[in-house]
Image (tube, rainbow, N blue to C red; front, side, top):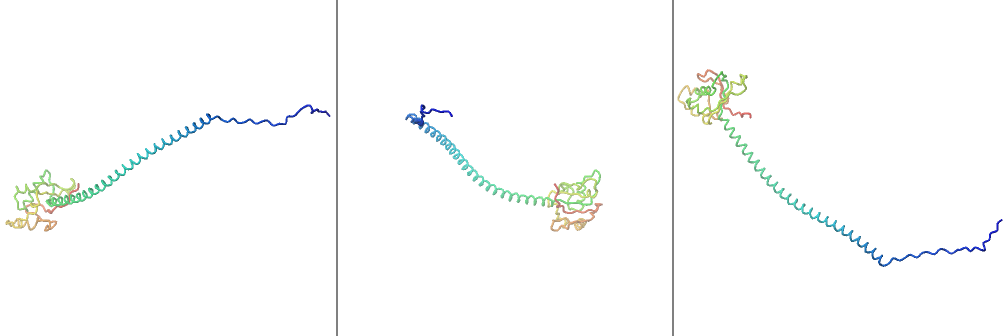
Length: 230
């Protein structure tokens, strides 16, 4: 075994001393506080700016809402007025349609329809109808030329059945009634009147099929109130 000599050595058993914390100076503390206050103030300023911006936005939004409210009220008032105007126009339109329909019906009562008069090449259909009417109407040829306004055949060409139908439009409804024929002195004319009576719609017998004197054709003559197709 080895011998150790510890007597000559001294062991230091004392603990190391702690260093004391240095206290900051008053100037450093004030700078830190001032810096913190400055940062808080800057943050508050930013928040204040945001609040001002939001307040301005809300103020503008409120102004727009008020303007929209006023516009909506005006539009509602205008809608009510327009609805009233539309109702008035609808009533007026209905009355006008009825008046136009009455005028059209009255105008159609000026028409006569002749069935059974065949077509001829190069014919003057108006003169042919006037020639037929001179045998059944107590009017002169000159007067009939003034009375008979328009004469045309109905139907398409090539259909013989349609081409025998004519429509004659007279210049006035009084000329179509011919009430004076009832008191005519000519016996032949009285016979024609009994066979082919042209009176108002109330006493009109409907379809009449008689042979007109010296006409050479058997035809039908009746009131034509059929509405023309557009």
